[in-house]
Length: 246
Image 1 (cartoon, rainbow, N blue to C red):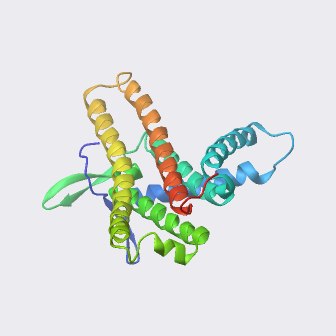
Image 2 (cartoon, rainbow, N blue to C red):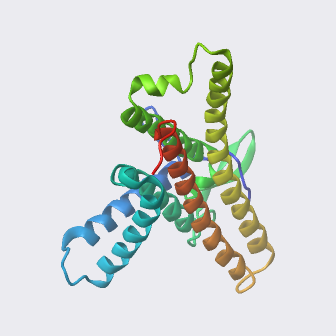
């Protein structure tokens, strides 16, 4: 990678919609997950195939974690948070494949010839991580309304009591900080990894960068798990009524 840009590079256009390298990769990740899901669930049997066994292990492990925190709400919450995990971890790991950041073309920008990569790790684009954080926040509040009802939901933020009203305002502010935290945590870790790999690979060749790639595999998994668990915790906290205990 000759240059590392904070902004995703435009590589084409579909009608009025500009297509960036990170948007293209997000489509690839989505299609990959859909195909793998169809293959894994095409012939489900009591005697599982190795692929079915692998996916059952992932689903069972994830569901157990979700059920421990959300209890009876697990069947509703699990598909959402597991989708976040699978999408983010696949996006992080696909971004480590050969060709990402190195296959592209040259074009003129502001009178200078620059290299534009066709493929780039999508979570190194703040637009993508912010979009994921917004989806997480919206889903959290939709589920809160589902489980609390509109009236109990509104009472979390609005009250005639000045003290509770002030607390509600602070809670509203905290909801915006959650979005910022989710988006910048994921973006910062993946973008930093992209910079490290590009720097090390430009200085050394062959075996020296391999430990850094292994480290990024771990970081990619951890960041996907963190995003999933934080979303889960936010949902559980917001969907519980005051004084509710399990």
